[in-house]
Amino acid sequence: MTDEKKYDYSVACHKLYLLCNKFDLPILRNESIDRYRQGLLEAQLVPDADEINEIYRSSPVGSPFRKLMAQIAARQIMDPDSEKNAESYRNCFKDNPDFAVDMVNAIKEGTGGILFDDPTDGDQAAYHEDPTPRQNGKGKGT
Image (cartoon, rainbow, N blue to C red; front, side, top):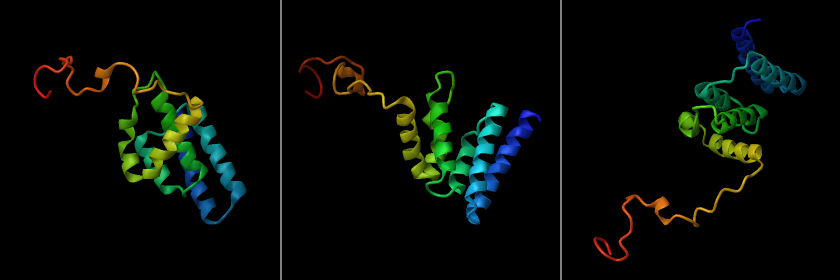
């Protein structure tokens, strides 16, 4: 099977998941998400931001598919070899405010909750709008 067909198969598995959710078929619902993930893995492809937006939006609140989409996006953002950043998912954030929360939680979970450097400590100029050095009370605005 070609990678494109594997990906199409994965997309069909999401549609099956939605159908299973509608008719409350939990065993088949679990099988469909397992097959979705397997298809993506075998094809070595992931949904782009527009596809993630659509899948997230069409999936029920609290569903494993929503969690999976947030984790895929988080992984792409955190991948040092990827050009993706949060801007890539602006429409996802706009269309699904919960997506932003889910994605930040996925980043925290995926990184083990790494503590960032304290932004209140260190270089005072790091947060200046104007990079001009301070003049210690001399000049405009003092």
